[in-house]
Image (cartoon, rainbow, N blue to C red; front, side, top):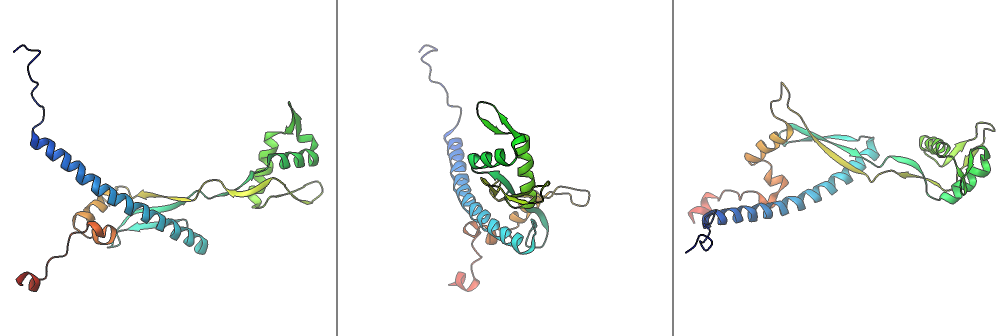
Length: 204
């Protein structure tokens, strides 16, 4: 038999292949459970944080283990209201007529970007699609502009960091709590260890 015809020796034994595929299967099954639970938890938390902000104005809340140990905090993000041009033509027509000195002619007559930004900043600060004409003192409704959220409301999680008085960060503290079994029953009950069999049941 020539060297070209020699059968290549396998790099992995059947036992290694079986162990690797089993590991992937187990991790995939666990990952599916965790991802489903995480999406449900994230949806629930968003609804609760939105309500808390509406009722109390709070935007940041602690995340703690069952024993009260803080492992991180959750903060609201996005949803800040800002003035946005939603109808370019209506806004431009109004701005050119009301403030002709701010109109510029390119291929078509439009409004200077810096002036648009100035107006939008004023309306964002006021929280309404209106501006004050400083020359006349008149409050002007601005067509083509709405006060809308700049980004979809969401929230972010930040874990605590290690310090001189706390040798472990929030992730490590969660891992420790998971190892001793206090988290699975309340966070992932589907993956929680079965309760020990009652002695009377075992005797039977």
